[in-house]
Length: 127
Image (tube, rainbow, N blue to C red; front, side, top):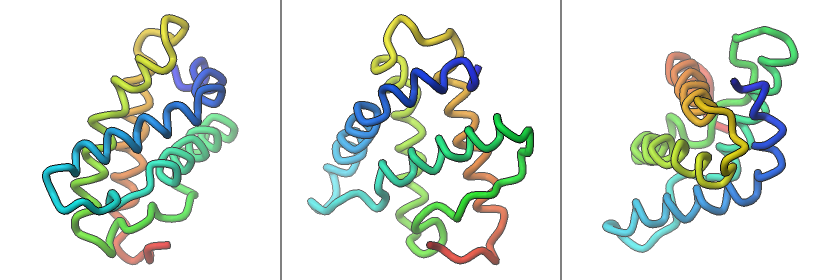
């Protein structure tokens, strides 16, 4: 599913990032008017890079740098959850009818696998 949808995701990357940024701002609107605890562009690009690596090598060991603020900022964990909550509907909407069925969910699962690997390695320092 990831391999089939990767070219489509890459073609719509900026639109997806813009929508993720907007979703995070809306989710944080009940708090102080500050930027989100994470940068949607950095997180989404790390996810795409990780998926490309896994597809290219078959290696499912996390090789990317730790996601920003994963351990340095406790509020970031909540924001990562909000990122994941927004990911599936945004992918469905941005990729339109050409997206293979199940692809948005596969991207969300890849995100949580990446996050699980990141949070399971407390000795890794935040970037």
